[in-house]
Length: 145
Image (cartoon, rainbow, N blue to C red; front, side, top):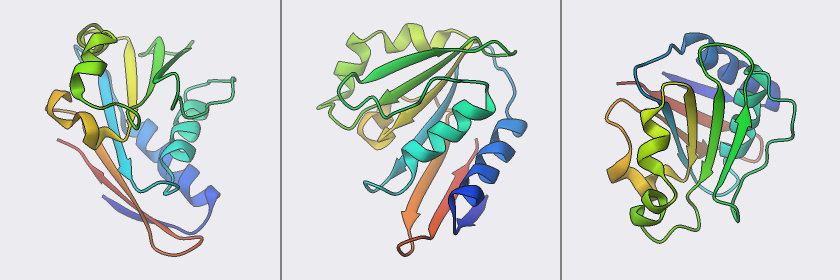
């Protein structure tokens, strides 16, 4: 699916449509977010969190690498937000317990800069690529398995 966002409201609509289309799996649902710096990955993550009922401000966990938010709705109990920007290799994410994170069906996992850890993403991850078209316009490409 391809979208053009000309405003934060457009981006929010795409996030809402995506969340409404998601369903639980027998393991974590992973959403891989890629795109240049400032292309909309964190903003999209914020809207996903908002749609899922996260009330805390969602910021890119660049220095923390991972931030976990409690969810009260079904089917997920946790939103796990990972920023792989500073990672040198997939091994670093594995050392943070990646295998356990993706095993739990109660986790919805957002991975910013997913291309840095692409070889350890589940085969059924949803991939979203953000592209700058101009100062206010973004192209959002969503690929589902």
